[in-house]
Image (cartoon, rainbow, N blue to C red; front, side, top):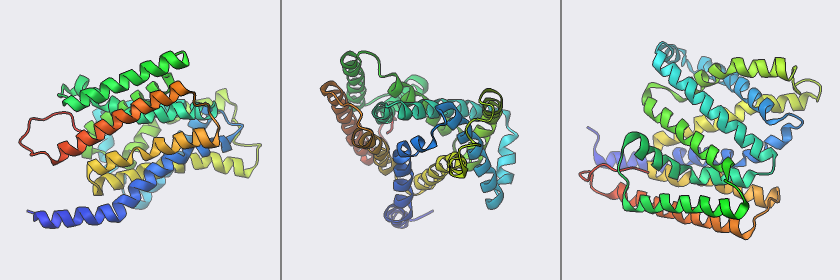
Length: 313
């Protein structure tokens, strides 16, 4: 058995060094993605996602070959249940990617940031609805504030913030599926199966619908940028996988807010998206909900383990 003091030392070392660096890098890269997609013009959202799927698969195949991860990947692929769940996860994350890229290219980056802000609230709701877990009072308050924020934004802007709701729901369900698979699926092997399941559709879209798309005919830098979509997809996921192995979940929960904060800043300061008063009110309510959820999660993490199980952050 590992002595508590040694466990604490390892945790602290990881928190101060590699784990913190990997976590900040992952969430920082995700937050800066809105600056990347406009560089891929004239490619549209679906074409970008098709390239993102195919080049992510290439990246994962090369990575598995270099790291010797083929054996575990082949063993995992023999399970029809695991492959089916990963295929469903691939559909969810592709939907998330498509809506996200469309929102950035259509001037709705702030809405995308809202989606990733409310994602933790959606995760709590999923735990209650699907896993039948109990919520603590503070979590009820956070969920209620999240609903209030959606109502405020809907009435003030003149319609449901569907971009935010789709992004939060698809990513929440994606995380739930990946969480259920647990350690049976390594990050790179899982991403390889997800993108492999989507690759036939991506190829059909590029070759039949787009007739090759914009990959050829707009210069080498444009082709390289489209291929780079696979790298900017896979690298943050691998950094994130390394971070969650080295950091306490409470720290990871705090770091995740870096992504929508950067997206929000880019949408407002770089892209000049409008922020009327009602939108500020909606975001303010969401931020209060996240503060409540975070404080409650930190307190629960320090509580004795003998307490009844409730929804964890």
